Length: 288
Image (cartoon, rainbow, N blue to C red; front, side, top):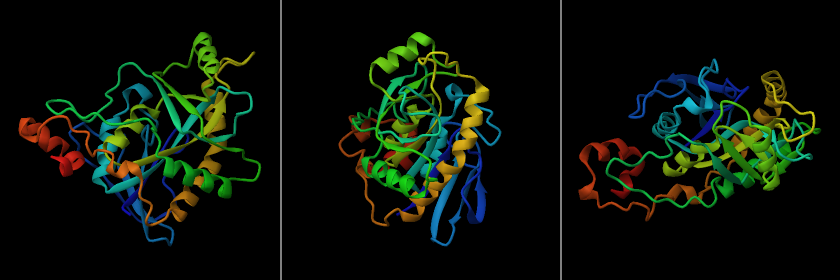
């Protein structure tokens, strides 16, 4: 097993308890990551964890402007093979009340202007993405959350996360439409993060903390104050779940994502520009 990654969402800006900590600044072909990557040994496990606050330590970058490609490229360079992410999300179902932790297994993409791939510029990669979260990590993260979260915390396995562009919240019409489709959660950062993890052959799953009911619910009006207040309340349970997931992750857990690029490159190596080959070598090198 390589390094375990943890991407902290809204409300989570500090790493898990780590020893021998170092902060590493990565230079990537896609610009600078959101922040330096904090790397250290988790507790007494001997396991290396790399932490990256998605929005930066001061939450200075909006979901639309996040350097998703730089973030994932940096984690790949750090040797990360498995990622546990966290998200603050709105609920599209009455029973998923604020404070609920959900480990989704599907995504519906409603983003509009984001860079969705590492590839292009002379190399075409067509990658399966039917199961956007690694099923093996979904199972493991759910079990960890159920065992480690406070007793009064509801943990739900599975569900569809609809990813909107933001940074504005949904209109009432949009929210009612998402709910009518039977989807479960609404957020702003699952895409392209999950796609890029798959393109980097990193197994990826997220634990989403519900902060609000979006605006489909009668008399519900999402405010930043409500979201931040509930995100802070969810922080303890999310960190407990991720800590348990890191501690109990089997050494030999191989995921389909780890060979996700096999058979996906549609361009002969000799036809790929040298500059492009150099850029994607840390990601695609085994297949060129």
